[in-house]
Image 1 (cartoon, rainbow, N blue to C red):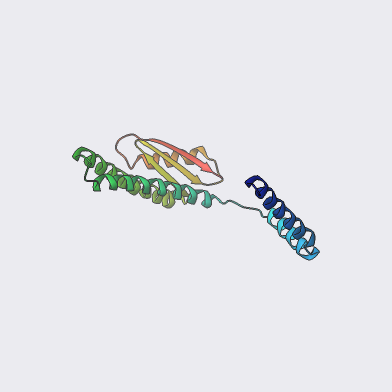
Image 2 (tube, rainbow, N blue to C red):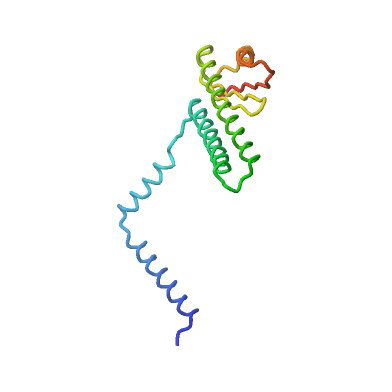
Length: 164
């Protein structure tokens, strides 16, 4: 009678034997094609543009915003949530929408005034700006900060980062 251990040994040995025979019987042409495909895959060069980085940042920000909106909507639609939780979720949704519109406003301002593509992230009193430019100019950064601060009556903490 064959026990489980012997059965597994015979099965694995058969599998190794079949794979060995298959490997030995492969034509040289197929083998050279496989090697050529491998060498072509290693030669790919990926170039990253400034706009690609900005798009990646925007996608990440949109995904984060979307998950927050879904959380707030779930709280609003949940029948077990208290009135206070629903009010807080609604206020947070309003803040999220407001910050999104402010980000678009700042992005358009930078595009019109400085002719630069940018990514803007607003969180509380902090405004982070990533500008797609190879020129790392402190004067231009100060001009951007002043232009953005003019949009607000209260003081904001504004950072500008040049992405090259």
